[in-house]
Length: 132
Image 1 (tube, rainbow, N blue to C red):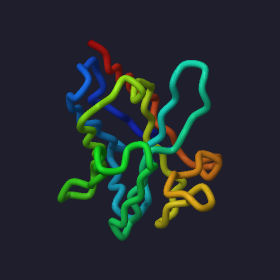
Image 2 (cartoon, rainbow, N blue to C red; image 1 turned 180 degrees about the horizontal axis):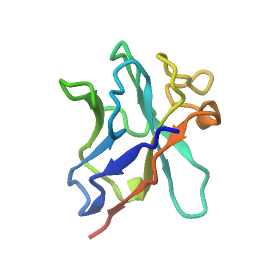
Image 3 (cartoon, helix red, strand yellow; image 1 turned 120 degrees about the horizontal axis):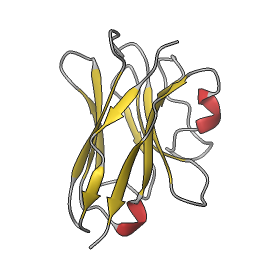
């Protein structure tokens, strides 16, 4: 099964920026939607953003205007640019795909639904810590 790989996490001060990357070695992701999720200690995994194969994008309200999801020109890598980071953004961030072209969202929101990835592929996660 295809294994996604994330990178780019780290420690940043409030107001700072990080860019996360997600790829699948040896495989282009352009025909699939790719979602970003995060999980903070003691909390459930929550959807952050999704980019469809059409390049349509979706964002959780908590990150809208601060985070941007995109693909590189070669359609191999998906990025999550995170600006104006806040302490509450601290979490392990995962990318995932259910190998569908469209994003499956939680009803009445723009948050990707983690239940849609049951038969898909997850990355191993990358830690993002926002702290002074």
